[in-house]
Length: 133
Image (tube, rainbow, N blue to C red; front, side, top):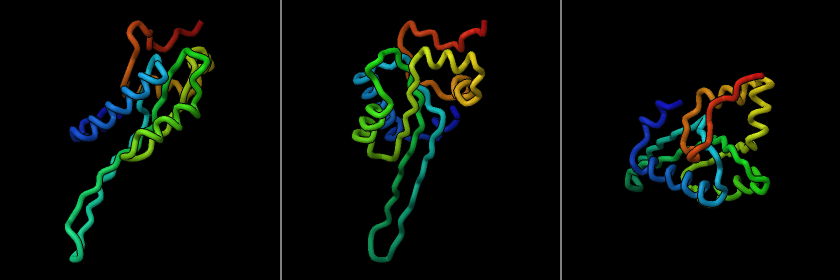
């Protein structure tokens, strides 16, 4: 997953950075992870118009929050309104729900936590997978 970011050009990096900053400012998550992305580059060639290259990138993000006010639907609506260079799918977990998923050995969540690219982490947040007791 982390290798995908090596393929990004500076404009894509800037767009992703702006998206993450927007999410952080509005929703104050503890952590944001990218667990999937799809980079597309389309070239259009025609004898009737100039050649053009169109780039877009879709992301699937996991956000971890601690506040009861933030909902996944609010986040999804927000990112859909500000990110115009592809699609973003948000999966939002409350910190306690994340810990429960790990404790119950939820393979989907533990794989994301172990393999996804960390895009943001709040100072002081312990991002380690909690020990099973």
